[in-house]
Structures are given as structure tokens and as C-alpha cells.
Amino acid sequence: MTTLVNNKKAHFDYEILEKYEAGIELLGFEVKSLKNSQGSLEGAYVIIRGGEAYAMNIFIPPYQENNTPKDYEPRRNRRLLMSKKEMGELANIESDRGLTVVPISIYNKSNLIKVSVAVVRGKKKFDKRETTKKRETDREVRRDFKDR
Image 1: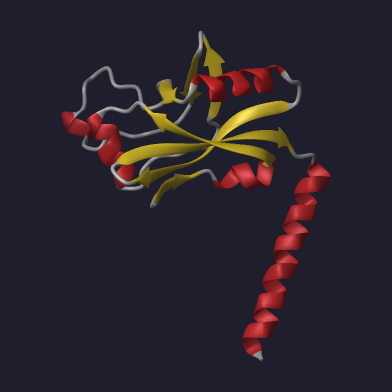
Image 2: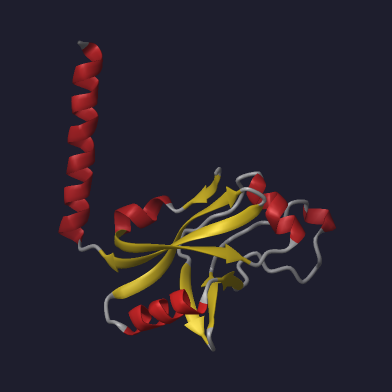
């Protein structure tokens, strides 16, 4: 399992409550682009409409600019492949105030491209400061042990 694209800001901006795994519907050159670790999940989110899940605002640049169709949109909506039970759970969660569904990472699982999707709650400013302080103290402790 190789991580192709990771949403680094998600762990900082959100408190992760629950994780799901989903397939994603991609075009061939998008797969090649992802395997080169090109792309971004920053600002991406998931919506459930009409019994289907869609990943919105995922940026996947074309693999070769000259060989892509003229009407290709790098931030197009991509359908997620999930079970009906999981989509039902996400639809119920989506209706709750303060909760959002966000893609965390895109990775290889054997020959398939999968998306790790999480139910998250936004952190307040003081929570973010607390996370930063904890990270800095952990880094200092690791440095001290390394020097010994």
C-alpha cells in the first residue's frame, strides 16, 4: 500500500472521528498522474447526492499536457465507489451540524486506487495552537534523546 497523495492540512485543521475506504472513478491519464504523486487534496470534500458519493475539488493535473483532451477539468467532480450502507451512514453524518466528510489520502491497494475518507469536525484556533505546541515539544524531546 503506497500513499500517492496525502492531505497534510486535514490532520491540523480537523479532528478525525471516523475513517472509510472508497474506490474512485478516474480517467487513465489521471491514474498516471497520481502514480507520479502529482495532485492535491487541499480544500477537497465529499458530498452525497442521489444515492452516490462525489469527491469535490480534488486537483489532479494532466499527466502529459499535450495528450489530454481540450475540455479536461483538473478539479472536476469524481464519483466515489462505496457500499450503500457506508453511503447511508455518511448521508446521516452529513446532515449533522459541524461535521464534514473529507478525503484524507489517495493510495494504491494492489492494482486499485483507493481514497481514505474521514468524518471530521473542525478545530478551533486554540486547538490548533495546542497541536502545534505538542508537535514542538515532541520534536525537542526527540532531539534531546538523539544527542545522548
